[in-house]
Length: 232
Ligand SMILES: *Cc1c(COP(=O)(O)O)cnc(C)c1O
Image 1 (cartoon, rainbow, N blue to C red):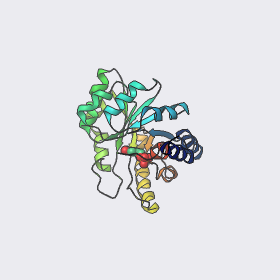
Image 2 (cartoon, rainbow, N blue to C red; image 1 turned 180 degrees about the vertical axis):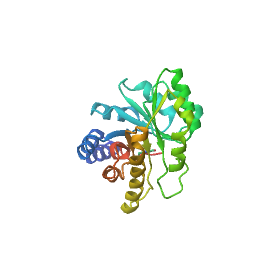
Image 3 (cartoon, rainbow, N blue to C red; image 1 turned 90 degrees about the vertical axis):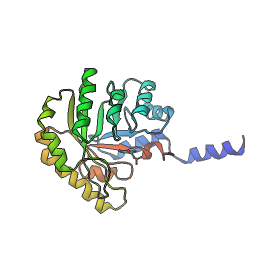
Image 4 (cartoon, protein in one colour; image 1 turned 135 degrees about the vertical axis):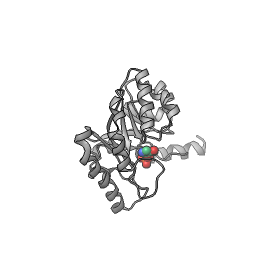
C-alpha cells in the first residue's frame, strides 16, 4: 500500500458515510417533513449510495446536470429543481421534473406551463419569496407573490400547479435572525394557504434545517450534511 492510499482510507474511515449521514438525519426530523437530498456537483455513485439507503427525492440546481443524472439514475427518483431557472432551459426538464422550487415570475410560470403541456404533464411549482435580509438577487417580495397568485392569467395555466412557497434565509449562524426570517415566511404561508391550497413550505438547508422545521418548514433541502462539502 502506498502512503497516499493509506492516508485516504483513514480519512474515509474517520468520517461517516453518506448512508449513515442520511439515516441519522432522518432520525432527527419529524416523519411528515420531506427531505430533498441536494446532490448538485456530486457524482452518480454518491447519489446511488443515498438511493440504496432509501432516498428517492434529489435536488439539483443546474438543469443540464439534473437531466444527465436523470438519464443515469433509476426511474423512481423524483427530481426537484431547487436553483434559479432560465426560461430557455425549461424544455430540458419538463419531461421529468417533479417540483420546481424557485419560480419567481409569471413569465417563467407561463414557460413552464407551455413545456408541461407539450409533455402532457402538470408540473408542481413553488414560488420563491425573498426572506433574507441581504438583498438577494432571486425571489419575489410578498406583494409580488400575491400579484402573481391573483393574476387572472394564472387560472388559464392548466399545466402548472403552485403548491406552496420556498425561501432561503441569510447565510448566518445568528439564530435570532434566522428564526425571524423563517417565521416571516411561515406567517405569510399560513395567511394564504387556504386561499391558494398550499401544501408545501420549502425552507431549511444543512446549517439551519432544525430551526426551519421548528418554524414550520414542511420540506428541507439538505446537501453537504448528507454528501459532505462540495468542491466547486
Ligand atoms: C445548495 C443548495 C441547498 C443545500 O445546501 P447545503 O448547505 O449543502 O445543505 C439548498 N437549497 C438551495 C437552493 C441550494 O442551492
